[in-house]
Image (cartoon, rainbow, N blue to C red; front, side):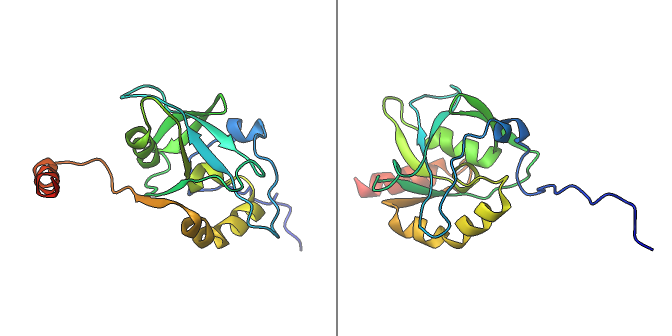
Length: 165
């Protein structure tokens, strides 16, 4: 006898909930046959100012210089709300801290960050983009490895800076 229970709804346990953001449908479709990808423009800001960003969709992203950011995602319940194209977006707190640290006070910065640049709500796109991540990292001007907020190591970094000078 067949079960009459409805099929369970797919829930993504690995990323913070962004249902309202995805409902706005800001992501343009990417071609799975090409190395298309989106970039993120971090708008200027300082300190605890709200983090504001813009998605750069293909073909505008093609040929732009950018940096990749690598970070430890962490707990999907631990978030920092940022703004992407004028809409609230729940970023992993670790990614939010990294964006806050690397943004510039008087100019934009172009990056690729998987949680925002990949439509996490589209399983097919997510699979396709994850399989191409090596390409995205290889094409980047540099890769920023975010290890977290510095706690107690200020003297070590100050010493390294002094030795370089």
